[in-house]
Amino acid sequence: AKLAFRIVEGHPDRMRYFSIPDFTWSKIRQVNKNLLLAANVGADGFKIAKFDKSAALVGTATRDGRRLVVVLMGARDAKQASDDAARLIEWGFSGFTAKALFKKNEIVGSAQVYGGASGSVPLAVERDLVGMAPRGAGAGRLTGRIDYRGPLAAPVSAGVEVARLKVYGGDQLVLDAPLRTAAAVAAGPLPIRAWDSAVEYVTGRIRKAFAKIQ
Image (tube, one colour):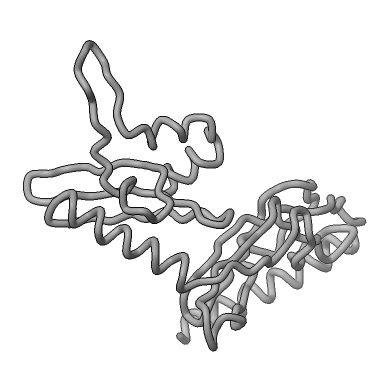
């Protein structure tokens, strides 16, 4: 799935090769064996792989400006892989709705900083973020959290990936995106650095004590 998205986002000019139905080379007609292309679900790539006793498929499809990638393994043969992937794609388009979450460079939260001229640094997304939520009663129930190992030690540079934004639909992770620092934080004066170091030492000991209890 990651490789598929890397091709889609990094090499869009190559996508046309995956949807060619057939071509002739050295007077031999080569047919695209990806049966998903003929399933009328908007598929435009990628590949079916055959093994001794099973088949696997990595496919992608677009509809109304949305793109889905499906990865399927353990099918009986290429036809079953294609049929099951087509059903998954249809379910993905019809069963979920896209929700715009954040615009590129939008501030979504902050991370704590110790020893700095400021006690925190703002965090921003590096691209427009869209989450997929189930249609129906739970469509609007998305929750999110910022994960990072901190507090961050000053100085902190701007534009550095220091955290991840994780968005959930119920218990299901629907989005995991990097967060970058939206500003720089210089090292604070010596008294502030000494105080923050002492506080971090004490809280660190407390965290370790609670971890042992649990």
